[in-house]
Length: 335
Length: 292
Image (cartoon, rainbow over all chains, first blue to last red):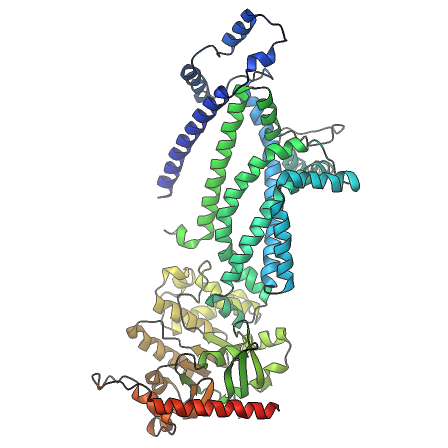
């Protein structure tokens, strides 16, 4: 049963990725801008242009180019970046950990902050305190992530400069890391001095990404909690003598979390999309920042590689949400 | 002997709205089953909820006292009241399908109170749960305790809820129409179970129902309610033999009988209703006078 579901998901994943690949491939070739023209100095001869064009296979027809690229992808070769002159796979995978760590940190912040606000609001429902929570949510939600980034830079980078406003880690530091997962590795190696430095770089971009999501979580979870708290089994728990907070945490939260979880999955993919611009804002060396450079340089193979990787991430996030959902809901687990 | 539950002149109302309970007084002795009977909206469930401290938001007790084992609940702080009621009383709810948390296993839902409120060790609480599930004639207690609610039938879930209510040896159980949501065939078994456990554990029960047939079967005393006012009360046998109030007589005439299934059911006569409304109006006027 589970195997069948997994195979079906895998098949749909392949189809989705193929579709994404086709669309991206066509769009970036139809869009104006010539990668070859960007590479050569002004005044290069037509013969030079043609030679370079042939070198990168851009002289062939679009379907032909696609098949060559697809053939490479199937063998694990995603082509060579035009602007950086290195294999795309290595470039993209080298940047991926930075973006994953940033997104994960943002998700954790959003869950903690949103969860806290939701529980606090449900605990004090129908009082001015709940109205305060609603007001906070409204403010967090009506400002987009990149604007939060600017606000945070102004607050904690300029007016009260306690956090780093640019980069992923201070360049003066010696990094003993074997992988690109700096944050995880610094914790595993117990180098908390490095963890602190990484966090002082990551907190602001992560917070900028997290605030709108935290507001959505708070709003939806609070609403679900308030509905659940009117149900019979919650009344029964109250009769058993539990405090209101205990009733919320023990009886309410798990059942109220289900509808929120579905939405968090969708919204988390938006958050990952948001890294493109927020990483740029904080000069954070992740996948998103690389994507913007790739687009500016019309680096076709690199754009394709990055977009494909983003698509894989989105699909995996959705899969993870479905799995968590069935884990939380016993009715689905046995179904 | 002090009453297990004593309610004195209880009044409840929607905040800045109409009265829901009108000067209700009643008492339940240890080991006694008192039925609260009346039509929908008569306030019978409201009394149980007021005792347990789970009135819906916006409804509040405006005057009167509730004494549980001689202790005036109104005099306690909210936290202490919650724990006192939790330790001394329990609820058998109306709808077994919604009264169990769908995402938690049955076992902890029975033992939670024993462990967290009463401070039992886990092993003892588990043993107690098995014992009670055995008492409500669940054949495989271990398996049921490891199940989720959706894996059990409605009748099974009501048995689980009865076991959970009796598990902590409460002095008082409020049974809020515990058979209304069940099949007729299951209803009888559940009633018998409640009566059996009540007798064995010598528990006082406030039994809320709209079914006079049920009243006759399970209760020793009964209070008849109309519009939140007790219109007649007394020992069940005497009340059934010679109902004094015309409303009680009318309710009895409106109850179907197995012995004579084709007898036509009589609605409550308009004259009786008019008399009741006058009584309720008089009670409201009396309250006005009391409050000046």
